[in-house]
Image (cartoon, rainbow, N blue to C red; front, side, top):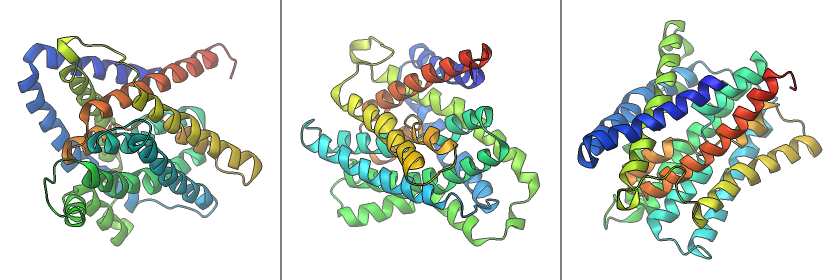
Length: 313
């Protein structure tokens, strides 16, 4: 677990250092290149291999459906808060919604599950990531971006939603994975796909670091960034309300797989920056939300690691 923490912190620092060293304009060019590498190369490849080789059982279907329903509900709750008490504009509203519904279950959650749970539970977590987080990213987050972002200009909103979704290469990778037989994703692709996942971790947080540094007011970088009311709302919904409900259902209604409450509590995914960048949502709010939720998750992860080291867990 300490390796995950170290990777995230080093990558954030590298992004900040890159922006400070080469300047905002050049750093934005590099951010664009990294985003395109992630969105058009690494993520489609990982999605295709993972979903084509997935064998989900029926025992955890209730948890998957519950997670999707909760994400939709919390997304609407964030919309109400953003357009009501918080008074956010449309790009900021969309960014806040995406940061609530898009969790970092892939390159933050899965390494934690691997360290804390059995191989069978890890397989269930892969299914959660593939069947909850991936559809949320492909359909939910990009739809929100199309509805609230500025990239569409004055185009008809329905047409803009469709256009944005059709420009998402991960959508085509997932569709292909669902249609082809498993033999089209042979065992030989598993190791390269894992390497691609490991690459997404530093690349994603380098993008976050560049964005945090580039968007810092008056050239003064602060980490953590200021805890504004919108960020506090995202933190509460993403990391408190969601896992508490999942845990309560597992304890009092129906037994869910052990890792599901942990995955429900994951920080906002670095994919939020990809969506914001692609659709014209508020990049600063997205980066700040990722920074705060990730910082909280890192602190909790470090505490668990220390407890394990002293034999308390």
